[in-house]
Amino acid sequence: MDFNEASPSAGLPLSGCRVVERSRTVAAAYAGRLLAAMGAQVVMLEPEEGSALRRAPPLLDDGESALFAYLAVGKSSLVCDPLTIRGQAALARELDRADIFIDDTPVRERAGAGLDAASIGTRFAKLVHVSVLPFGASGAKADWDGEEVNLLHAGGEGFLLPNGLSNELFPDRAPLKIYGHFAGYQGGSMAVTCALAAWWSVPELGGQHVDVSVQDAMLAVGAFALQRLGDGSLEHRTTRSFRYGGVFQTLDGYLELLTLEDRQWSALVELLGRPAWADEEALRDPLERSRRGDEINGHIREWMARHRVEDIVRRAQKLGVPAAKYRTPAEVAQGEHERARGLFAPARLPNGRQVDVLQAPFQFRCTPLQRPGRVPALGETAREATA
Figure 1 (spheres, rainbow, N blue to C red):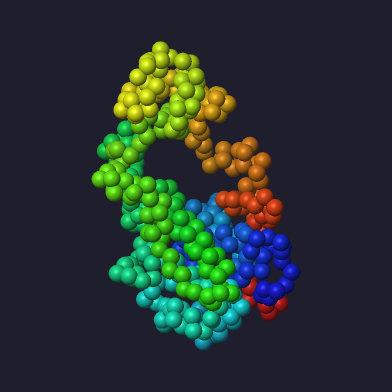
Figure 2 (tube, rainbow, N blue to C red):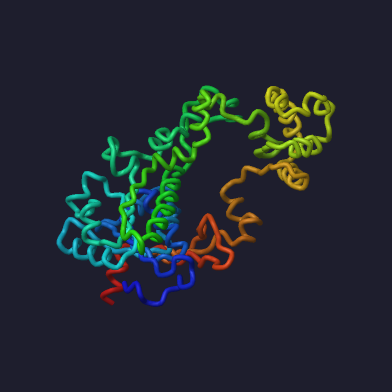
C-alpha cells in the first residue's frame, strides 16, 4: 500500500503520519485505533491465521468479533511473520517509511524477530518505537504476562471494587473486574499520548524507544487513592465512597448523584422538595454533612425510590445538581446527546455487513473526524499491492 496516495484522512490532525502496529492485546490495538481516528495511516501486521483479536468476544450474531471491529476499523492489514526472511523484508519495508511503530511482542520474543529496541533504533533512526506491555519492557516484571483482571488488580482498582451501593447490596461479593477492557483502553490511551510526544520531538531528538506499562496506566487512574496513602489513609472497597451521594435506585432504574459544593447541596435540597430534615442548622456545615453521610443517604434513598429516573435527572440538571442515569448500551447508542454529537457512525465489516461503531472518545472543533470506514480483511494490503 502506498502511504503517499490520496487519503480520506487528508486534513485531519494526524494526516500524513504513518503507523505500523503489531498487536496481540487490546492496549496496543487501541493505541493504533486512536491514531487512525485522528487521521494516521495505520497498517496492522498480522500472522497468517490473523490476529487473535479477530476471534475475541463479544461476537456478533454472524460470528464476527465486535471487539475487533471497533479496534481495527480505519486500519489496513498486512500478513507479516518477522521470523521468516520474507517477513523480515516486509517488516523492514514498512518500518522504513513509518513514523511510529506500536508493538506488544513479549520481551522474550523480540530479539529473535529483530524487534528489540536496540535493533529497531539502529536500523530506523527516526522511528518512534512504542512498546506496550502489561508491566513494561524493562524491570523485574518485564517478562510477566498479564490479562485484564491481573492488570486491574495490579493497578489497585480491583482492591476498590465493588464499592458504594454495590458493596452495601452485596457485602460478601468477591473483588470484581470492570466490565470489558478498561485496563487495556487506559494502556492504549497512555501509549498514544507518549507516542505523539515522542514523534513531535523527532526533529530535535530523533527516534526514541517509548516504554509503556499498562500497570502504570492503571496506577495513574487511581492516583487519588495512592495520594491518600501519604496521609496514612488506605482506601478499600468498604470505605471508598462519597460521604453522601453516589449510586441510588429509583422507581425504574439507577442514577448517580454527586454534590461536592455548597451550591450543589442547596440545589439537592430543592430537588428533594425542601424536606424538614434538611433544614437543620448543623447541615449547613459541609463537614457535618460528611460526618452524617449515611443518615443523609438514607433520606435521599427513600425519596429516590418513589420517583422515576428520567424525571429526577431532568429536574436535577435544571437545578444544577450533578446527576446522570445509568443507561443500557442500546440507550447509549440511540441517545439524544450521542446523536447530536455524531459519536457513532457506520463501519463496514469484511463480510459486507454494516454496523455502527464509536468514532472516537473525542472530537475536534475545527477538523471533525471522518466516518470510521472499513474493518480490514486479513492481508488485504498485500492483495492491493499486487492488484
